[in-house]
Image (tube, rainbow, N blue to C red; front, side):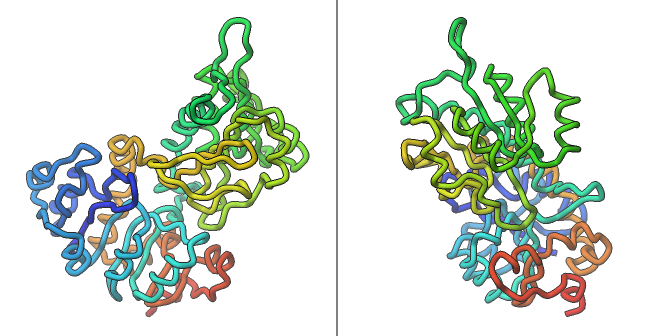
Length: 372
């Protein structure tokens, strides 16, 4: 199979879909790999690193899209890229379709077979290709929240860990999954007073057993959430419904109860965000003010630490990429129901139910998609 990897063109996105190690593995398995020139530069991989393992460097993304059997990326294809996709071509990347009707329409129109990292599952019920970026985003959230909280950035001017005689920042993390746990650990490590909200009593018991000396837990009822955010300096949104639009857990009216200069970090923004006032921003212009509350809603947070993120993502995606290349996508997905869960579009049909529900589009069962 011919595997292609274009350079990411989303603003301030420095990650790359295939590392030199992943390219070497694919080539060792008998496949050809083409990389757009400078695609890996932002993550510290120059063209020579790819040439050294046998990959071909091409001058343009157009050549990748025109010739590759499978295109491997990091972020969802941008409009100019979506126009180049074609029927019979496999796209393997993050998609986050539920809040993005334009992208969904373009993928369906292209007829390509799109497999989304974020909906691939594992035997334990986890999301193995989302987890590494969730870990990165979770650890970044308190850092960017602390920066947003600085007075020069419109924040309250509160130091996360305080100093002797001055109390630390109060941090509320909504969601106790992978993102929330890592966010809480880092925020607590910075000296903040941290509370994690979740609705799963089983998850809260685990967090309490493992981290009771590090941070607190509380039940995420609407009333409790409203009460806690009113006293918070930073609120981190870390809620995920796999493949679906994120639930809106904090309303516009509730902002009026928050402290002037408090900071919101919405890690769920890729799925539409879990605050009613959230809108996607970029690393170039990451924060904005709504009713005195500073919002940080960068849709590709892990791109800020591109080398760490690229290596972590490459470690996770490589076995699946090889499976798709070695067997072809139909056999690979037929053999592995967890990979089949990643199928989002095929030959103009939507194949992921949560996206169909969010966008009001009829869905073809992925099992039936294997037969066409």
